[in-house]
Image 1: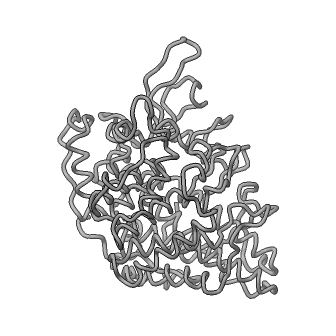
Image 2: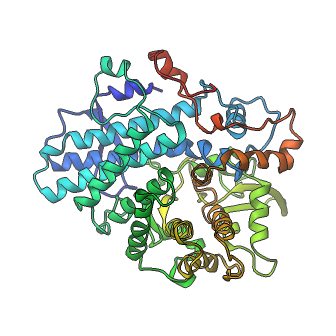
Length: 504
């Protein structure tokens, strides 16, 4: 794997072969200046930028969901290299030489490089509407990638153009303020310039739209700014606009049923605002998550091949689902999100096993699933708006309506104003709802950070999850410095003057 600084100076660009659909054709790499001569070539570069998200997503679960209280490592005592890598992420003992951390970092910067190359070649696009769309897509992807980087690492390298190797070698990390300025600047430029359509055209499903931009910007504002600040207050109108584009749902009946959100025969349904798209069929665009998450040694009764059984759902998450419903009316989301057993057709026995099931689909080749991965969807936005209303105005009827809308879809009882009579009670309810609604979607860790409770939550998890009390050695509480990831040692080796995050 190349280091980030080599990616920064790379002269490679991505060519997508064929049509626009983001889950249809693999890409190859060719020299830039010999290729980018017209709008069609730039369009292929844009599709290549989307496909660059695949390498990012491959390890994103490990840097987010695994570090939260939603999932954990499955076993202890194993000497395998992957188990040791998972253990470090699970328990906050990450080293600067952690290969998955480095792989994610490199993949994110490679994808940023692709987005920057799109922007650098826009002059060859003659049609102004087409040129604006390509620019908007590239800036949206760049903002999304930097938003994840700044939340995971804090100060990172700010790269917005092709950078020579000599310059890259001596670059320093930019302050968090500068990273957010780029993110907000890119997203606001898209909105102010009306660069993207409200809805993707037929055949372009999966390409960024204006609701995706507004939803991401609202999340940025709610992450970056204090409640009541000018920027935080802007999030409300953005979120309302996104829901209006989704048909302005007011009840659970207005939403896509939960089990249909992730169905492979219902891709890019009205719930999905933006997703990373996958295509099975041995074309280089399949989803790896069935192989990564499926239960070990399942004899092809769950998924074929030799799945890894990573990202194991915690007892705490299972209890949260169970406590949210009743025996008569269980939370419908649990069955979609995780499984706790499977039927062995050979032995005729039910086998106890737990795994994240939300992104599994039948495969004929390992690492080649069909299911897309939602990055932003209606349930997320509705709960963000309920949270925003409560934080700015208290538990109003409108806030209660959006919260109960999500609970109605889940098949569990709704709240009354008597149940959630204070801002504190409503806050706790919406936080619990976000956990269950978005479980295993890589949102939990970022929410815990946004609320400032990551350390407390994880340490409570360590002390209550039976798995850790039976561990080979004492699992130590984490401290605030462990919330951020270490800068990969490969980056420090290239430029020893680059500042490492404290504690590493």
